[in-house]
Amino acid sequence: MPETQGPAGTFVIAQAEPAVHGAAPAHEGVEIAVPPAEAHGGGFPPFDVHTFPSQLIWLAIAFGALYLLMSRIALPRIANILEERHDRIADDLEEAGKLKAESEAAAYAYEQALASARNKAHGIATETRDKLAADSEAGRKSLEAELSAKLAAAETQIAATKDAAMSNVRGIAVDAAGAIVGNLIGTAPAPQAVEAAVDTAIKG
Image (cartoon, rainbow, N blue to C red):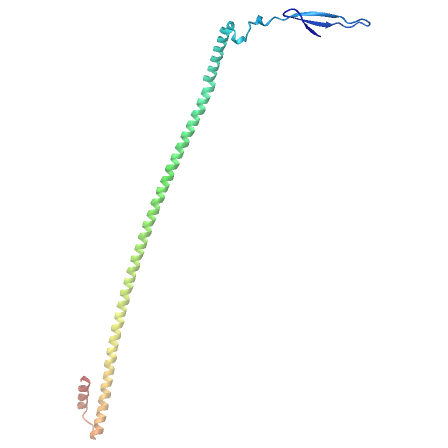
């Protein structure tokens, strides 16, 4: 359907009629009135002053609905989320503080136990050293006493052996002196005189 420009504000649409066998096709024009742009107020509808009151009313309704939606649904949920997050952070900080306090207490107890163990070990070492020193001193004194007793016994035995030896020597000396004097003078001397002479010689 071809269109042609008609009078101002109208378009003419030519409609082709069905062709009859043996005849030329005929065209019939149909006019459609199109209102000019000035009929709408000549501008963007939201900027039309005649629609400002309704626009303000709908703006107030939309703002109120948005405010109710935000205040009743969105903001409480956000507040709940922030509150839960704040509580979770506070709980985590409290738990961290407890763990820190427990770790500090454990470290302090460990230091105390270590110091106590050191003191105990030092005391055990001192006690052991003193005991060993006392045992050593007692052993030394016992050994000295035993050695002194053995030395005294040995000295006594030596003195007895010496006395026995001296007695034997005196007897041998008396016999020898008597034999020698008898050989020299031809007669045996008196035993008392020989013993007296031998005793004088031994003492001298």
